[in-house]
Image (cartoon, rainbow, N blue to C red; front, side, top):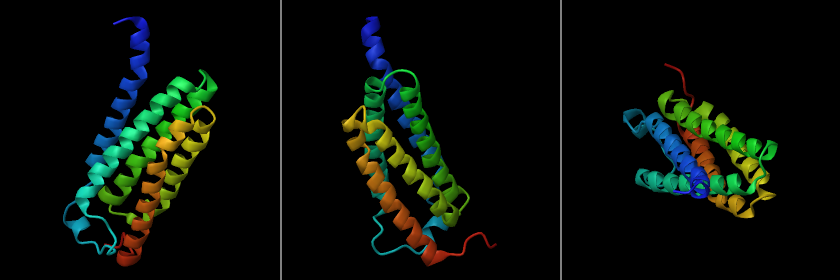
Length: 165
């Protein structure tokens, strides 16, 4: 493989590995066991099997946005800033699952989902100047986090308070 081809392939491999890492960590934090199944859920909650395909699509689109960001954002501070926003978003994504499923604190997760949502929006704003396509690829992510936040809110209202006992 030529060095030019390797240079073009590198951001793709990094984006795929990062997306797989976030998906794996998020999956490890997600426990669909008796506690979760015992929660009252709103009637409009999608079936559990839909969450896997939805997140798979979102992670794929986010990885594609990351590749475009890498290729189209100038080296130095602009690219470093974009990569920092992707890293912060990945952390917040996994942290939400930790709060909600492992710590069994949907109330804390509801607070945190605001920061997750803002991190997606910040990515979209930051990438818009250099790649409108990358921005549009993140729109389903923003929509899904909005929906997840509303679902999180409904769960808190139907089941709270949490952390007592």
